[in-house]
Amino acid sequence: MRFGFIGDIVGKSGISCVVSQVPAWRRRAGLDVVIANAENAYNGSGLSPGQYHNLVAAGVDLITLGDHAYKKREIYSILGTKTDIARPANFPANAPGRGWATIKLADGRHFSVIALLGRVFMRPVDCPFQCVDTILKSGELPPGPVLVDFHAEATSDKQLMGHYLDGRVSAVLGTHTHVTTADERVLPKGTAFQCDVGMSGPHSGVIGRETKQVLKTVLTFEPTSFSVAEGEIEVHATEVEVDDQTFLAKSIQRTILRD
Image 1 (cartoon, rainbow, N blue to C red):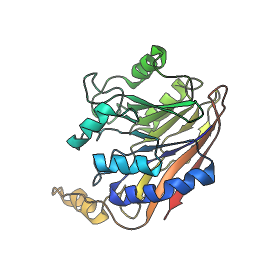
Image 2 (image 1 turned 180 degrees about the vertical axis):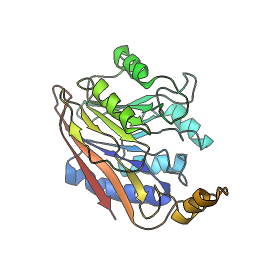
Image 3 (image 1 turned 45 degrees about the vertical axis):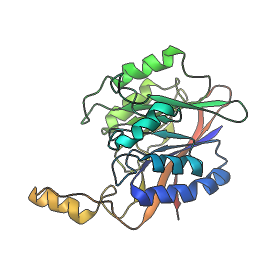
Image 4 (image 1 turned 90 degrees about the vertical axis):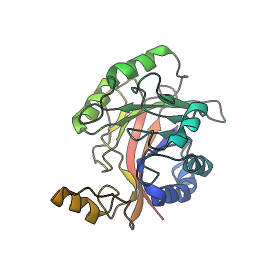
């Protein structure tokens, strides 16, 4: 099995580029499953129901969210009724939505994704290590490859999760920093790992925002609204090949998609 994971989608331009590129990418790369982190799709923060439906219609099979999961309240109904979208599993138990999502392919195979939020320089949440242990031991996930989207700030936090889950899941791929890291590799026990898949959207600004606005706030401390940047739209993603018997990774590679 081959799957592709798309890094944080930022703004309308990011959504548009993903929607236009996914069908051809699936065919070209021979992808069985496409997953995308879409927590920054709505003007840089949150996801709207319309954007959710556009991504699904374009061929995105599973969607993950992060610390901005609830910025658009309209998404609550989607989180409560759909099984192909996941918010961080280590959110409070009564938080809207679920922490993992699963798709069943036409040939009967299953693929699952678990969303987790890091704790270093992030909002207070339950321990992601204990949380993922609980999910993996629960028996709720069907047999098949498992991707962990670790939405975290610190690279050390992400590396620890990769080694902690090595041999237990198919891949641990990081999101949140919006900057692609060049450390993709298959760990010793067979788990594909990368600190951060990167960002899908305008790469002309500062992690997707207009440079002048960010710089003004940094230099003056004057509160400024950060709008989504324009120009240089790219989709940063990672492709992983998984063994159909062991569900462990055989290879991992970065890729960039452009209109």
